[in-house]
Length: 310
Image (cartoon, rainbow, N blue to C red; front, side, top):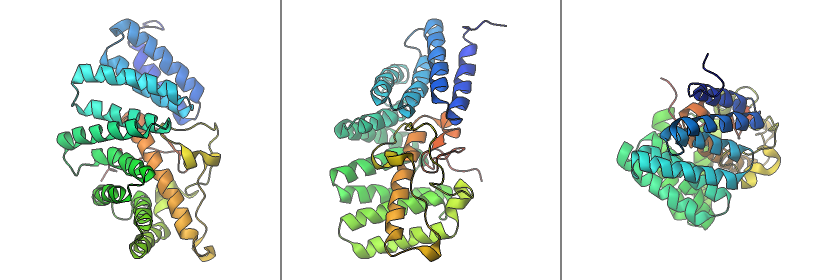
């Protein structure tokens, strides 16, 4: 009807790429996004906001394929367009800052990672308010940055901000409340407050044992399936990449002393990284994102993207 390179073909290519990404056909996803980018650049010019949107999706694709440097370059370009089109303090710019900051973190540039996330958080707090769920990606990313820097007091403060927002938006029995409580417990442990650490781990364990992970991830449970392509999601790195899976929790009656702490720490780190990876690419791609925690396709797997329907 329009030909293979018409401007109306580009959005369909992007949607098709999202579907291939959900099916873990990452090379095919990349090919379609690169084709859509060429069409948008020719039709609108290299600096149009439609080009920026495609660049963000393509950056996420490069990240999942493990090409973090190429991801960074693409996202830097997208950020420049968004800043010019929307202004430097717009929420669209903040979203780009979160995913670009995460790419810098994966490249080992903790300073830029922190800088971008702090800037994003300031914009989002002004735009949405200090207790809106949209600020959770920046809060979660900054908590991990400060944890890596050894600033455990600041990590604790950020996680303590996250918990009540998550409980309000998703419910106190949601599995990602459990993993964030476990991550908060680890911060208290790093600060030497073992009593508080154990209290939070117990809260997290009780949520887990009441079936939170099964309700959210299905009967297979978290960590039951390994990635098929060996690639990494937009922000997955470090321990979360080892073997491509997270250890599944053993049945309660078979737990050995110390298992809870190890398992919940693994789940917490993986869930936070998963959430940030998916949240940063926007709601459309996030809706069909691949969950790094359970290695399965999940609709809106990131509790940092949007609250569930009520």
